[in-house]
Length: 141
Image 1 (cartoon, rainbow, N blue to C red):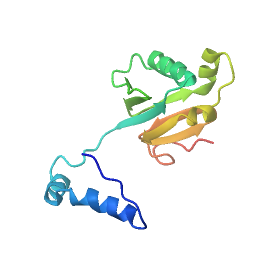
Image 2: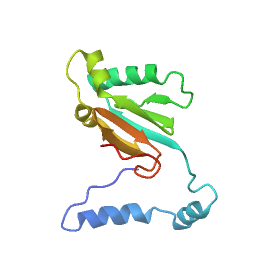
Image 3: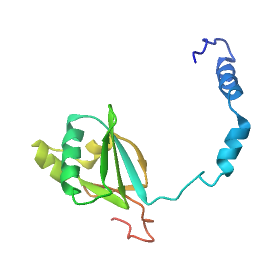
Image 4: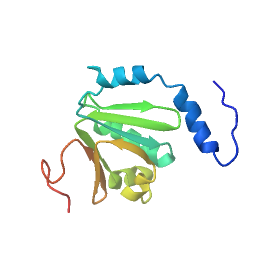
């Protein structure tokens, strides 16, 4: 489906109207009310845009979590999708050793595209978990 360009003061509204007009409202309603609408999961997901540092990070993660059957890394072209049950951690100090140069958790965060789960930084460690921080797990200091 190709859309014709729209210009003028209401071009944004016209583009939205075009998209909305193609939506099957009854199908959306049926999907929302079906049994398969939303399913609870204990999986966390991290998307990292590719870079030299991220290649080293993915290698390190694959070694660290080799014995975790739920841990998966998917190469999605321009980014990696990393997911696991309950959570995982990335130690930026260990990545720095692999790289042979300084690498901080904040260098890692530049490449974090999105997360599903509760992400936090504790020192030079990036963590993502399903735990409720401050309730199921102590707040990092």
